[in-house]
Amino acid sequence: DDDLGAHLLWMKEEFRFEFTVDFWKKTHFGCDMGFGTNERTVDVFQTGIEIHTCRSTGNCFWSMREDGIYFSNNDQSWVKKYDW
Image 1 (cartoon, rainbow, N blue to C red):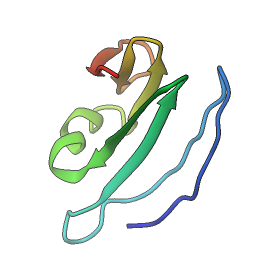
Image 2: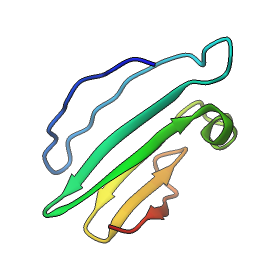
Image 3: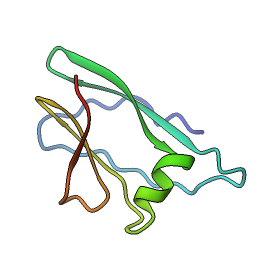
Image 4: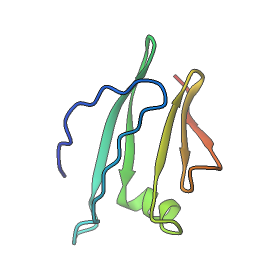
């Protein structure tokens, strides 16, 4: 797994990256997210989980909001995955 470095994003900013699932199907990306005084470490991609939810579009989207962290595979229909 690659370290993508630290990225500070402001409201409405995005961070995008592309990757392929490794041969052993153990690809994993984690992310430390924060919103105001709230912080949480989130697994943003694990082969055994997100590969099924992201397969139809080939994309995984995450959105930090005041009330929690949301997930979508089409950037339109969002599901709250985590509370702060």
